Image (tube, rainbow, N blue to C red; front, top):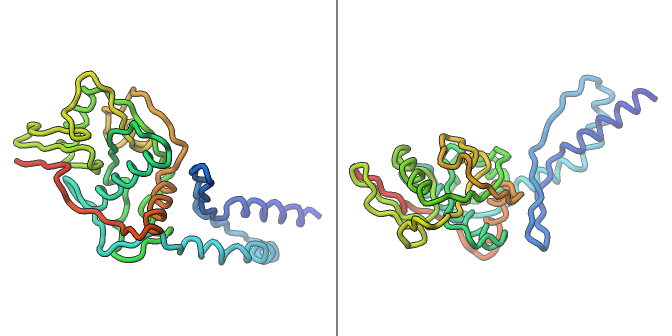
Length: 254
């Protein structure tokens, strides 16, 4: 009896750790996607029983991880001051938040190159690819930034040589000085508060984004990885390809 109870507890525990792929409900909220966890079992008899119990789920897990969510004609690489991967993902997340989370007041988005771990392949893009791209459990959040902090954001981008920003921002530096700075095609308004989409990690000052520290943050309850998978899947269904290019959103000249 003791062995049986122990085995049941372990089967239950492993069942809770099995990979679950997010399901989008009719109200557009996304359930979390969690990674699989593997447990080494020493007792051979118990191990056989557990393997037998989880066997029906293994194929389903692999099938979901191999599901195609997008396609790109060519690789989307990282780079600075702006590059195809960061440009594509920032624009994708900004559009997703406005359309699916009702956040129409978002002015722009900023993420970091370090948060995107791999380039996207010039081929079919699968769920497992997005797990490699974004292995972290970061959440999408919106930060309220006053105009002076928007200037600090600009200085940060110049000092870093660039980080991923959405096309809503047009920023040009010449000789270390700002020559052009537009948000939503308009000059920075000193009396305005701006709403910036980012991750919870960066909103807390991660990657030295100290201009976010102490600011009001609104949680969306949606993981960045889940949002990418959902948004790419929807575009793929519409026949759209994953596409990004180097453009004029951020220019840094000597």
